[in-house]
Length: 501
Image (tube, rainbow, N blue to C red):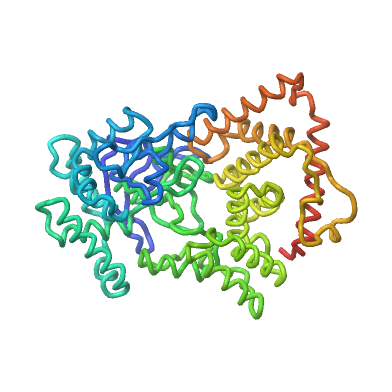
């Protein structure tokens, strides 16, 4: 990603500059940063759009921020735009904001296409086109100029990825036709290529993907598998936070890909989408070899399932894949085991399978995350702690007598010995949330995430106090619960999963 931008619409202590090793332009620290400091905070995107499935359940005005922060007893009910019936909003405030920005111009187009909905890239380019030259809410000259400086790699796309180029061309034709814009198709294709190469995955405060986002200044930040900063979104706001100390004049790096994956997969994705070969220290050094033989074949099938984007659609296949990884002694703190377990946890939670979700969330939180995400302030570790807290909270409310190993299927009791382990899920919930609140300044999470955690913790603490209990004075009881949970997860990790990590 490369470009330049005015700093009038955001806060940062960084400056653009020439990046070494053929990386073009990059972003450099103008001061020292401590872990969790904001490197860059952008209030409004150049353009941001929701994934098509999320149009139905996420506000197009605040991108779900108000929905997530709403009190459980006062959930936000979205209302569809009365004109196009495509986008939805929390209320009149979110609708008016989006209407004034650009929806007033795209609404008649969406209405004319209904029930067909344009793909996400087409909706993004459409939004850009409709704002350019508008009487109100047009881009500033600086914004337009900085967007124009972004790389396109059009020649590389045309020669190396004909399918991508065909999609970009068809998108430009559609935008040209529906917007009735005077902008030539060639320039619209240029917009599409820029968007493909420079957009971020838009996420909510809980780091679930909901769409795509682009801002020219943020697009300056180069990639490294040894990144020193992480990306987060809070509604339409973008936060780039330091994950480790960054010295003045040091280049800012984020990761464009999941760096927990093996080098060959990271490099392949970077070449095919971004047209460069990463030469960071992690990629230049020798990584531990991937499994070979039968284990290697099982891992390849697991990677293929993950990269298909359909892993979460088939719980049975997920379970079979996880058991195959266990049987072939695949490392439990590395890919593909890490992501297969993640997908299975999501599936279990969505189907109210709280027993296995709890066990696997606790395993992930205590044994896998510290290895897969070694920086303590990594937002993924905070999100996984939050997920475990939500599972324990639900168990404490619905199944407070749940014991282990009675809910474990498949004869795993033989590995763990006789007897049952009972846990106080309420105390576990309180402790997890209290830890997240007390260390919120150390985590690279966005303000919306912290608000959600604080509210939940306050509610849980209030429930304890209503029953005459104050967990702050129950240190021995809490310690006993975590000792039991630690023994449980230790046995699960060593025996059930036959750990060889």
